[in-house]
Amino acid sequence: MSRIDEIKKMLKTDKQDSFLTYALALEHEKIGNTKEAISIIEGLIKTDPNYLGAYYKLGALYESKSKMDKAMRIYRIGIKLATEKNDNKAKGELEEALWLIEEE
Picture 1: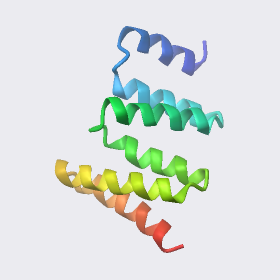
Picture 2: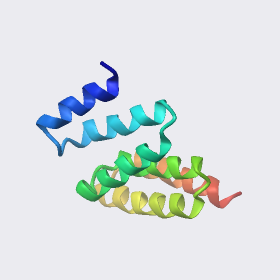
Picture 3: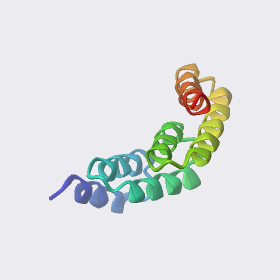
């Protein structure tokens, strides 16, 4: 059984598990299925908009597809959320990712 299959099996018992959903996206990214990883994380943000790590990953996935406008928009949303949550580490990582795009 692949890791994707294992995660999907676990998600059947709790479809709203944000951590497992995020893990599923990472597994798809590992095998080069970026489109599916993006789709999964977009869905995660819709169902759990407070899952902060999803914003950095989704922005990076958009960057990998040269969708810089989408990446910048997602990073900005993540920065706002990190500020609200007082998560300076995540905020700094998101700001740096945004800054790197803006500098190009």
